[in-house]
Image 1 (tube, helix red, strand yellow):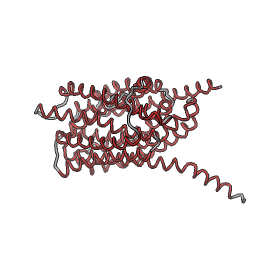
Image 2: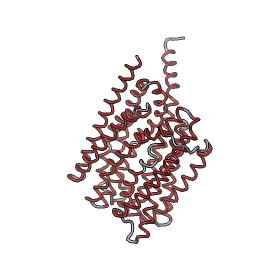
Image 3: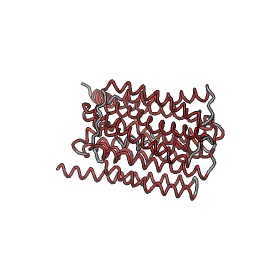
Image 4: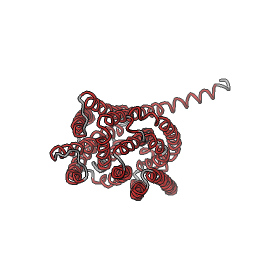
Length: 431
């Protein structure tokens, strides 16, 4: 063997070692990016055909249901993903656990929304039309959406990332197709008309996904009591984060014009979609973190370090891409949304700080340390929400931007301090 063969062999071995992970990430991120592009296409169609005023109202109901959907199911999807990743035989029980909690919590949330929201939102001056539209939006964006998202968690728990990717892309494309049919083909131009099309789309997708899930096993309806507490710990950070992320939209809706709200809402949606590159990596690594940390969270430390470096590289690239893409957005959404460019370019760098804390909290969650994870994210979001609300009310929208960055940086610092402490404690206890 010559001296030059060894490095080449080592390089080939490294390529063979990391190629499957790279291909899996490309497939995962590609599916999420495709879903994000399809979602933005849906928003672009609705923004053009509904007009600024109706689209601003649509953004408002989406902001409200984006908060409530995290309550539906009480975090049971994570329990399914984690437990099935560790033992696939428990899948039927965990599926039944999910369906029970989604059904009970979903019914209560829809009922509460029907009682409270008519005093806040009016889709139509006609009471009957207003009530029907509100009911359709609540059922669609809370119960049906949670059922559809459950399919992705099931497939990831089974390590079937191809099916998980297809479920994400298929759902996004179905919504885009519904928007094309509704607005372009049938000329829907009101938020009340879109409510029926969106409801029908979600019912169809949920029905198809349910047929595929039945191939993996029928549900055994049983509540896993020990998972309810962990589910609450897992869900509450998303709930409070959703409140914090949407309170600016709700307040700006009271302070600024509908056209500006539409622009800001789309800019926020674009920035939130840019998180998907990080989420794509997380959804691949979460089962691995869960397996590695089964004997102690410190066992996941080497992978956590590599994941952090990868997340930072991905986030910087994504933020830069979004920044240079922003000036072309009015060509897609319409000239009514010129302020979208400024909003997007200011907010796009938030993804870097999201990447910093997302890896650390994923490691905690996969290790079952949901108490610490919830404490960090809940504290950041509970304190951050009133700060964001006050800053938005005081200096809209500049105060909104400043407070968003302050909150994300603070969460990143706290998350890493706690994770390092848990790592040290685990190492000491294993000695």
